[in-house]
Image 1 (cartoon, rainbow over the protein chains, first blue to last red):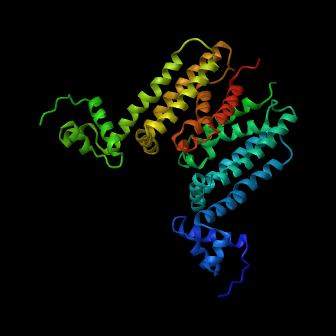
Image 2: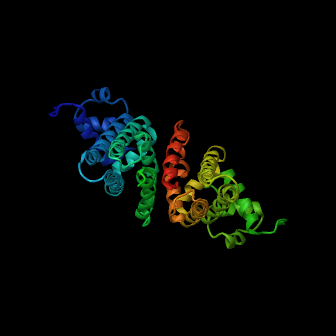
Image 3: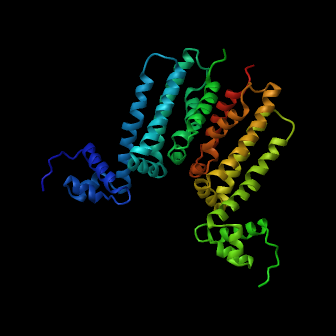
Length: 198
Length: 198
């Protein structure tokens, strides 16, 4: 057997993602991925000890690339008010989740399933997002646009208060016509809660 | 065959709830309930045309009795500030859901399943709860404790912003140690959003 690709983590995850998308999380085994990579099962098991850890790693990479990295770009943008940036960030999170639920349903279903099992990995992902919100809040506090407060606690509250629109457990509700109107009501409540009194 | 009980809606729902609790929603049929009531299938089908409508009616009664009615009592209480009443109301909703998820798991599982199917019935239940919050908000606006605003829109935003703590799709997360701390953060954000500036 020949193996033209070096066996690094990225190559393994590329192969695993391809196989998972094709056969679905239930039917994919570490052996299937080893076959695609033309390596022995033993070689692959040294990198990923189980089907579950393979799924988790693929989902983690997907969450970074598809959700967290693009949102980071919004945090780093300059110009505009902090409340505009916060709303833009939340709308980008919500719209990316909705888009993936509809257009990348295999990965989204795997992510929804992994959410229940890989608690620690998901907590790290959520923590990264909360720190992004906290940076926007900090900026707003410094400029006097937002009330003083503990930015990370406020950021966490905002993330939780918008769960209905981005947590995968609610995906079935996102198609409802009233979702945008409901987000607007929650956004107004949040903004009213963080804005400095004029 | 003798049937000592008059065949009214309450008696049918009592029998259906008993059978559903014993055999679970998947295995219970209209025929099983007819047997317990000692009536013919045809007689029972005149009241409930399907297994789904029977489940929906049992869940609806359970939601009224176990969730909405006790919360109504909190709205009607006098004394204390509106923010105290609102927090008490939210904590009662959250604690009743958590208690039922743990101690009345058959009914809770049926309710979680029905939530996905009986959209209209659940919307009416949610609307009833939102109107209860709106009455507390209205009182607070009238007393000057809360900012002026559209009480029903604000109430809906508060209900949605606390989904993480009472929507059955999140039941698995309620056991986490940090849930109370997270609710406190969301509550502070909400209160900050509705309280009149001092």
